Image (cartoon, rainbow, N blue to C red; front, side, top):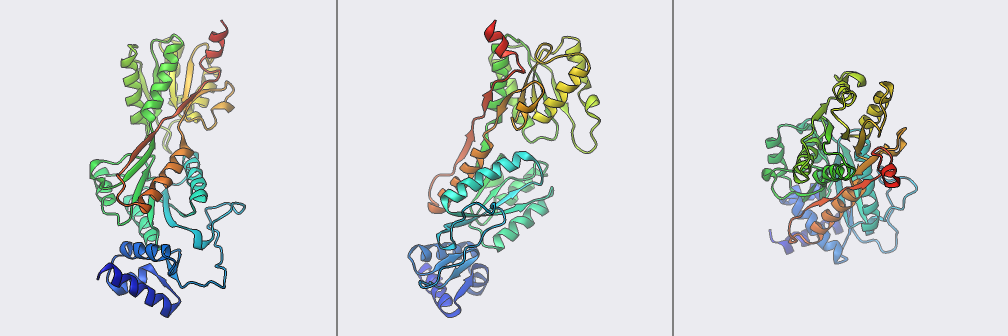
Length: 368
């Protein structure tokens, strides 16, 4: 069926029924839902019908369309009217974690500016659970997907293969896909650059060796380790020890988790460290204090995250990934793709910034 024939059939169905759903009409016409959604967008752009979530309805010039407030928007936030919503975008995020909340806020802000409806779905740990969430979003008629997949999702090859089969444009958010993931676009913080920022700052304060303390289960640890190692080599520093901390349900108490790090500080073997993340860094400060050790006198410390770093007993110097900006850029990228499918595919890395506080002693050295 040619494009003009499809669009005429859509208009006839809308005139006959008053409204249609993309899913049902696509099945009836024997075409893909993706193709039909593109046709509906084209017809709505020409003013021939009104595009609504999941489908379309006939024009009603004498009646204002009801405004639907999606659950993911705060009640006080202005939400565009249905006629003005350009696209519906599905956002899949893992459960829990303040990191994801900041990215979601960035998506929300961009959505209000761009007139996009965002539908939030919370995924589980398995590939099947993520596939089901995406299936439901597709059935609801989303035009694009923003995917912040669970960090523990395995195996990677099967995940990438699934991602390559998605029927709508998709942007991977704060994750990096392999070469098998097809036409996925990507927006992420440059965590390797962030780790290098911390190493360079500590080196500028006279430390010739920096340790790395990072969570085993964090999806960012490998990137932090790579950036840390590159910075150590580039600056000619002595390679420092790397410690991996387990913080999942089977983890030991905090004192035991950090025991190796604390013993190295007591022995004078570690004088500076980058710690991922804020919660672990604050816990380490408390453990050191209980052992009679002080920050920054005995350990100069930079944390990686900057969600609660300033609330530590000793305000922590922190590397801050641009979480909200990642969300905003991801939605903007999705809208650009929908508006112009021929635009080149993009992979965007946003650089974190360093926020200097008291935990490295930088302020004291500046006054010396």
